[in-house]
Structure formats: C-alpha cells, structure tokens
Length: 182
Image 1 (cartoon, rainbow, N blue to C red):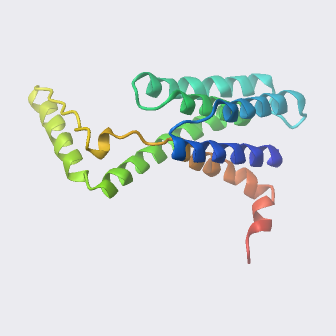
Image 2: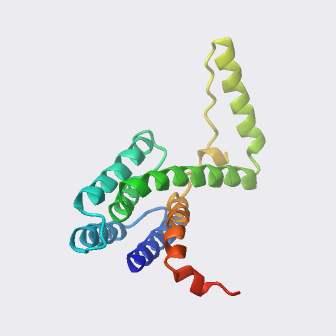
Image 3: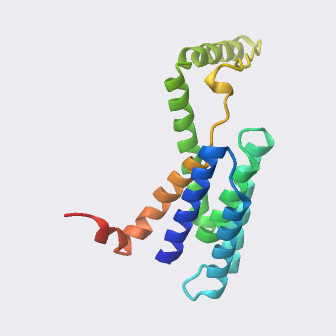
C-alpha cells in the first residue's frame, strides 16, 4: 500500500506543479491516478475493494462539484480529487476534501495579504455583514485589479492535503522513520 501512496503523491505533485505553472491540470495525471486506484483496489489483496474505491471516486467528485458549478475552481481540480478518492477510498477522501478546502482558504488569505489587498477585502466584508444586519444586502464585487478577483491554482492545496492525510499511514509503515535523522 505504501508504494501506491508514494506513486499517488508523485502524480498529485506533478498535477500541482502543472497547475501552479500553467493554471491547468492535465487530464492524464487524473487518469493515471484513477487507473492506479481502481486497479490496486480491485486486484490487490491489500486493496480496499471495488465498492470503497468507487465510492471514494464518487464522493471526491460530488464534494468538489459545487465549487466548480459556482465558479470557485476548475474541472481539473474536481477530476483530481475524484481520482485521489479512487485510491484512498471513501473514508479518507472525506478528510482529504476537508483539509483541501482548509488549505485553499489559507492560501487565498495569504495571497490577498501578500498582494496588499486585505484592507479592500475587509471593507467589502464589512459592507456585506452590515447589510445582513440591516436587511439591505449589498455585495461589492472586487475590482479586476484586486487579488480577490484572481484565480489561484488549487492543486497545490490538494497536494498538501493529500500528503497530510497520508502521512500517518506512511509513518506507521516505517517508511518515514527510515527517512528521519535521529
């Protein structure tokens, strides 16, 4: 199982590098991960089985789909999470989606802070919250020059979350202990 997790991490990192550089995740990375996940989980005695692998793929897809539909992420991010779900199964893909969203949030806030647009964001947020309390909904769309209107590559956040979720399995296998210097 450790070899499968290491191959998964390698392909997720490749997807993250592509996304960071080109703002696009190649379909072949997701396809390789799906073939790896379904193949391993169906044909290996150590695998999760076809049901758990299929449900992991479906859960990864369905949990990320609303963000795509509402314009928060690209289709490549959805396909990548579905592919990862086929490897790790339903239980771990739920954690992975949660940690991916958390990493995406932190990365977005850091991006806005680095670009120097935090004050603009807080002013728009203040107007929105004030409108909620007064009954006058007033959403101010960010300007084109604002960092909040920029598209961020999300595959690096997915890669970070994947490494975080798989770390205990890698560590408990003894793989990580061999890499640590005492």
